[in-house]
Length: 388
Image 1: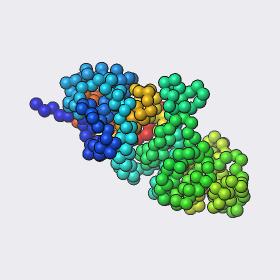
Image 2: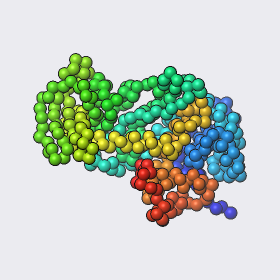
Image 3: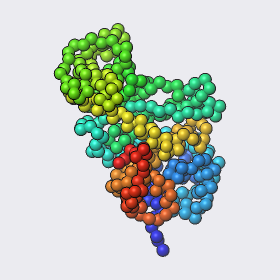
Image 4: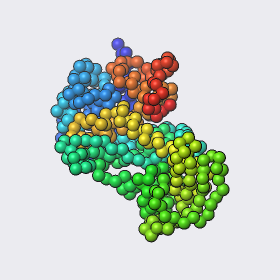
C-alpha cells in the first residue's frame, strides 16, 4: 500500500530536474558514466548537508543502512565511498554552480517583495567575503599565507530574503576589491560595501552603469567640500556634504562629485563617514542602508554553523567547489520550500527538523508547520536567524 513519499523525496520535488539535466548536458558531466549519475551524486551530497555528515565514509554507512529506501530517495545507484569521492574530484563543479544559480533566480523571485528593514523599492545588495581556513599541505592549490591555505567566498547578498545572488570562490590571496571586476552592475540597484572595496576607479564603473553604492570612507581621504546640506543633529547626523576628490589618483579614478555623510552612532558614540553617489535619498536612509550590510556577515556565520563548508569530503579544487556549491543550492532550496509552503518556522528550525525526519513519510507542510505548535521550543535569542 502506498504510504506517501519520503520527506527527502518531497523536498527534492522542488528541484527543477529539467534544468539540472540541461546543466549536465552542457558540461558533458556524464560522458562514459555507466552508473552513479550526476543526480545520484547531488542527492548524496544534499543528504550529507541536510544530516550534517562528517565524511564520505559517514555518508556511505548511513545510506547503506537505509538501502531499501534509496530508490524512493531518488538514488538509483549503489553507494560506495570511492565512487562518490571520484565523482566529486572529476565531475565539473561548474555544473553545480550553474544549477545553484538557477535556484537562486527562483528564490529571488519568491522573496522579491520581502522587506529588509529599510523602506526602499530598489534592489539592495551587500557585498563581502569570508575566509575558510585550510591546511596548506593538504590543499596546496589554495595558497593564502606562507604556512596556511584558504578559500574565499566572495558573496553578493540580496537583502530581500538574504539570498546570495553572486558567489565567487577563490584562493585566499585574491583581494576582495578585485571581485568588483566580475560583477555585472544592475542599473538602479544599491551596492553596500565596507572600506575593503574602496577603489574609486572600480566604483566609477558602478556609477557609469547608473548603479548606486554606499561605502565607508578611509581616514586619509582627500576631498574638497563643495556644498553642505542641512541635517537634523538630534538623529546622530553630523553633516551631509557634496564633495570632490582632490587626490591625484582618486580624482582621476572618480572625477564626478560624491556625497559624504558623517554620522555619530547614538548608542556606541562611534563616528562613521559614508560615501555614496546617490544624492536623492535622505542622509539617514544612507546610514540605515549601511547598517543592513551586517546581514551578509550574519549569512556567513549562519552557513558556517549549519552547512558543511568548513570541513571537506575531498582535497582537490574541484571537490571543494562542488561541495560548496551543492551546500549553497541546498540552503536556497530550503528557502524556496519555506516560501512556497508559507512555513511560519525559521530556516534554522526547518533544517533541524529535516535532519531527523528525511526517512519519514509525513507530508512536508505538516511536518514543518508543527514546529510552531510549542512556542517554548523555539531557539534561544542568541541563535543566528535569517528567515524570521
